[in-house]
Image (cartoon, rainbow, N blue to C red; front, side, top):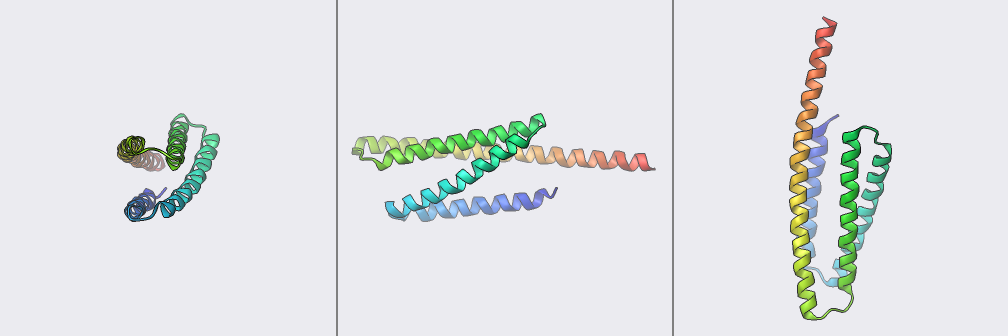
Length: 143
């Protein structure tokens, strides 16, 4: 498996997310709502993919990662519900409190992403080591 390609794709996705968030900061609420709706469609697709992977997973570690992805998808659903709640009429004090909670959720999501990247790096290094060990044993067995 070529992990470099997947890491490159992840890096591009992070750059795209950063650009989307920066652009969203200057948009109207209507434009932002459309952006959120599209992000929700994309997340729903990712949830379906994660669920399908979880159903196909048979190995313990593989299903654990699939379950983590499904849990993350559930968290995204919670965030979407909060966004929907904010679209209803709120007074300024409630709106400020909601904004503080949204900021905290965003910070937590970034922390989780950092943790996920660290864990992905460890898993990738383990996979590379396991492949090197398997190749080494195969070479020794064929000699």
